[in-house]
Image 1 (cartoon, helix red, strand yellow):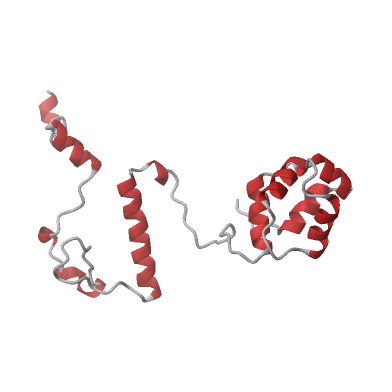
Image 2 (tube, rainbow, N blue to C red):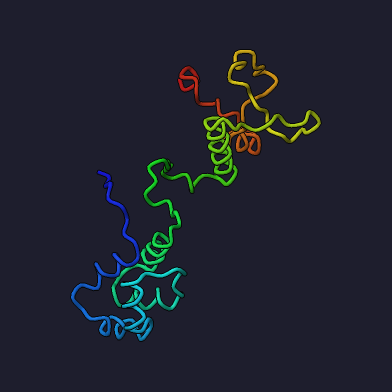
Length: 177
């Protein structure tokens, strides 16, 4: 179940965790940084610059809030889009476990597809650039010569080449009799 609730800004986050404790109590629990008056000013009047790392460290300790949550809340307060409430993001669970080449391929494919969706697809690469990826015109995809552009080599293909295996030895049920 997902929540449509907006993540809090810095002031709201601090006030939620401060409860009925005084700013002096929070400052003591924080180890003196931020000072009570400075924290009160931040919460009541806001801020125009990111607080310093010691402020995040102290408030994390005093309010029992992750530093990351405080930093993201401060960024939201300053109007910085931290992307934590963007419903347009797609998360691929386990993708970080893929080889770097596969991760790069996924990122490149996503960027290319987004460019097509936005109507700003990449210009065709110069003919003399052998390393440039081929761009397929979606209207001309039926005429694309697959024989001239073999599929991507997979990790299994590379393994089989290195170890002299075709991967087909035990695939035929007749061979197991």
